[in-house]
Picture 1 (cartoon, rainbow, N blue to C red):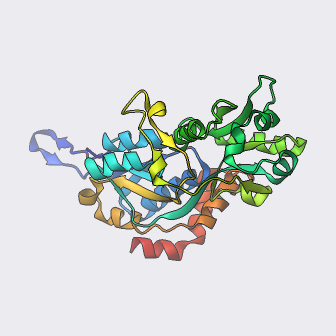
Picture 2 (cartoon, rainbow, N blue to C red):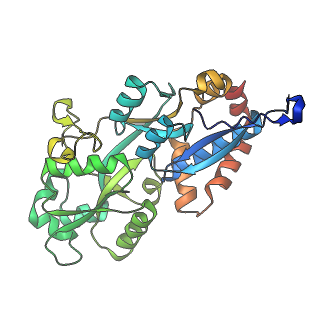
Picture 3 (tube, one colour):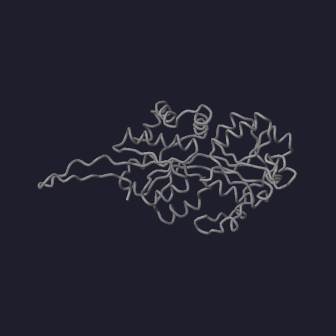
Length: 316
């Protein structure tokens, strides 16, 4: 069942029903900045233009699929593809409990370094990281391995980056670090300020490209024949059985919702299917959160105030 609260009050022996309470739509909040703001935008629009209450639930993107399937969450603000393709195959195509908006935002996923690092070390390609002499440039603790951030532990991309490291061979030469993005970005700022060589997972749209001189590492174009990702939920040996020996394919992200909303709230589904944010807006959202240190709800409120005409189009 949806997370919809419908109370029927029985008044004494007359059994007269009191008016139903407003329904509650739960919007999931993954832990990266553009998704945090988008979740707040969706919740604010739903609360102001539809006869529903809204609740925000912080939850990992992967875990959110199960939560929607169980009826605990109704909306996922950013489903990244191809990162979550196996989950889309399961919950959208097979179970039919989740639906994706037809409108997506184009994105990219790479490995990045700073221009200063590239010039100082000669780092050009992803394959260079498998060379011990190159990895030594990123060794800050003297253990013989370099360090690199590959994402938050809850991100689907982080699991795939582990597969990529194994497939390219730099899982032996580089220590793969997982931590929240704000900590990783603080580390990037510190590395740039001190001239410490750094290499890391990167994605766009993201504010870092406006704030720093970032370059992406070269690698072979995406080849579907050497990409095979096994879900951790399917096989404990997922890492050994997975392969990703070429670049990410072009990425995009979509709003998703519980399929049960189709019958209960078709007007809300129509709205969710019309949301069309831009890559520039997503980058601006991440800048507002990480650089300006603004609250996601405040960023969302300002965006809603500035975009009433677009919202009218989405909700009419």
